[in-house]
Amino acid sequence: MRDASSLDVRFYPIETNERAKGKSYTVRWKVARKKHSKTYKKYAVADDERSKLMAAHRKREPFDIETGIPLAWAAKAADTNWFDFAVEYVDWKWPSASGNSRKNMAKALTATTIALLRKPVPEQFDPVQVRRALREYTFSNRRNDPDKPVPEDMRTILDWVKRNSSPMSAWERTEVVDKVVAALGTRLDGKAAAASSVKRNDRIMNLVMIYAVRRGYLQRDPLPKGRSRTSPKVAESVDKRRLLSRDHVAAMLDWIGGRPRRGSLYRAFFATLYHAGLRPEEAVALRVGDATLPETGWGQFLVHEAQPEVGSQWTDTRTVHERRWLKGRGEGDTRIVPIRPVLVRMLRAMIKEYELGEGDLLFPGEKGGMLAGSVFRRVWVKAREAVLSEREQKTPTGKRVYDLRHTCLTTWLNRGTPPAQVAEWAGNSVQVLLSTYARCIDGDVVGILKNLEDDEDRQSDVT
Image 1 (cartoon, helix red, strand yellow):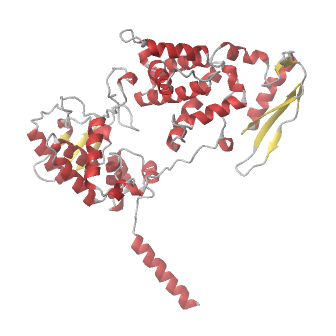
Image 2: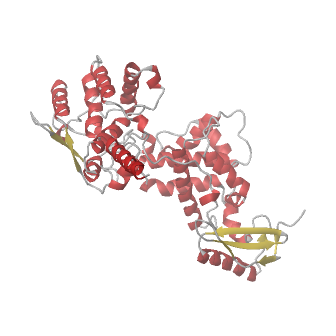
Image 3: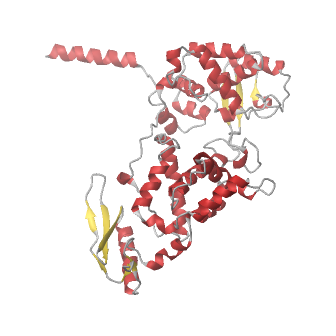
């Protein structure tokens, strides 16, 4: 059996690579007869990495022939398996992360953990249950809940996964990294994941790798960067096809308002998203006292919190909704949003019908608690099916409740409202607002085309 390490190490000068996006620098060395290389964007980083390798060689430290790094560097990585490291990372990250961040972190770590198994999952384990065991009982606070112990079937799965988890040193192998990258971009059914999901997973795993390097489990971030990472493009702007016409909204609100149970409340909720541009998680958190509703004229909302629905296993309070400050704003910050007279009248009538008090939720659930996302999404889906034609239902038009907010903000911009004012009402920065709705802003297209036509006529006269 051949020795896996060697003291025979040779170093080469740092190579400078000229590229369209700027220079990069490659460190090259050879252990026994196997060549190794690593490329960096900055010369100082490449020089520092080469110096560390050379210092280890001067100390007569043996190098791993396969990975090209000193054996001493890989000691901690070899002694720690990925499963234990991932649990350590979750425990470290959990206190400072929001509920949605925790949930997305668990999804990314679940896909990575399965990709890093040393052998295929046994046939007696349902793949869906394996993912559920990791996501909900390893990478969430359920793991430490004394009142709700992990079910026996989930425990059996997790014990097997832990026994068959690869050591952290596996990250030094290119084929393993490629397998993880592929898993992060693939759904359970084998189809490609959405571009936004891939981008989110990349961001999460880069933070995981930074932690691994800082704690000494890895010497560098092994995940590919830049051109070496072929991730799908994410559309930064809203698809204009998702926007609803005024007639569509009117018909859908009328249909919702005609529902026998709580129709007027759901109608007022969706109308608030459409006329005031609130996010759904902001609208469900509104109290009656947050709305100024005069008998005539415009009113206003004082928006000061959001209650996104993330799931009880991801919140500190063990409730489905997580109480958060406004998105993109400082702690305790608020914003004022105008309420159109038609919406003022609708809200006043609804408050009277349901006998809501000043401190009550403006849009309460059936039992008086927070309005559940699963409930209002179901109402919206039924309204869409009832109002839109079969052809329209196959398009992105109004497919998500959030599209009501998109329609509102686009309407404000297209009617000439200054972007700074729209951004203030919407709770965005001007830069994010314009980049998000760049493909939805019509502008004075008729006037622009008329000017181009006049210019073409003048050019014809010259020729």
